[in-house]
Length: 446
Image 1 (cartoon, rainbow, N blue to C red):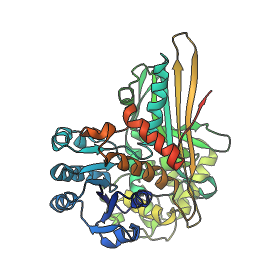
Image 2: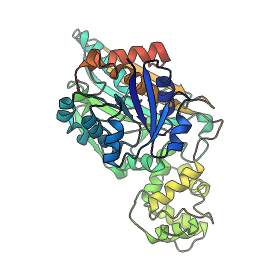
Image 3: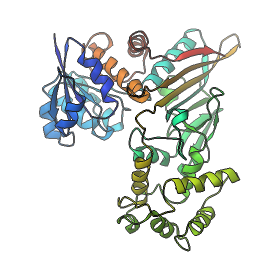
Image 4: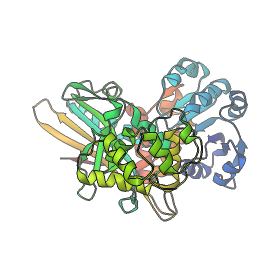
């Protein structure tokens, strides 16, 4: 029986999902975007397209009700709208985002409607869950205790393409990347709850050794503490999830934080297309708009660990055009003006590739007193002219989940709110990703 599937979204991760589902003989795929032209660019000849505005609940309800499954690859703030439409129209939903409190609150209605809502099946969250649950289950099955769980993930440019002061390029909104750095982080370390205030997040970054060929630093994510419960490892004395970046990223972002560029309060300096040197000098209170005076003021507002960090900060501000006559984009506040400039300068070029790195480290103790460390590691590069690694590692897991959910078989025979946090959900996804698409983590015992 042919199932009607609606994919909402025009972002770069949508293409692998569309390509896979378009080939399924028992799936009739429709690509839905706010503008029909965007949908037509992504869709195959045998796919249908529809214009739909996810911010209009009434319109969304009418469209979603026509399908067996809706895939929400639009910004996460609209996922709840899609699920509400799914509840009303008895349509299953798949997203790659975390289950929010607002989504969790809909669980009784989801069950009452008889639908399956599957979430957290991209890369992070997604593939990270699969290999965490697998390793933890294997340790527990042998009577072991997972005393330490450390997990870091990063989406980066390939080293040879990391040619800017941040060593970073934007495959999604610069605002989203920078706003993620404004949250206080919590994690467990050696049995103690550690809190890192947002303003200290970048300065708390530490080197992370993976292979000698990479120069990574890591910093903690917003809330790692809940993973002791989610992964059923209450015995873990250390539980840290975090982000990987190349060396130099955090030091330069810290300078931007100290200068006030992660603030989005309305400011008249950023409401007109002023020269960056004029806006910056007035914003930070420099004596004049000369490069020397601006940098002198910058140096008084921030702290450098080394002279090299100071030089890199100066070079970075110059590279961004902030010391010269380059015009700002009039976005009304410091954060969005900076983001617009970064997005101009820090996109992937046509022959450049990205890099995804994910590593879990498990400290395990067994009943006989023996201990071991296990790692699960993914290092994956994008293909110039093909899928980026991020698109592949988010879009393909999403498609695999859709193929399973739409059948309403196995674990999905029962309506409810799902995420890959139990073995019955995890195993079919692991198997399909490895065997059909070659996506897997390399597991080692150290």
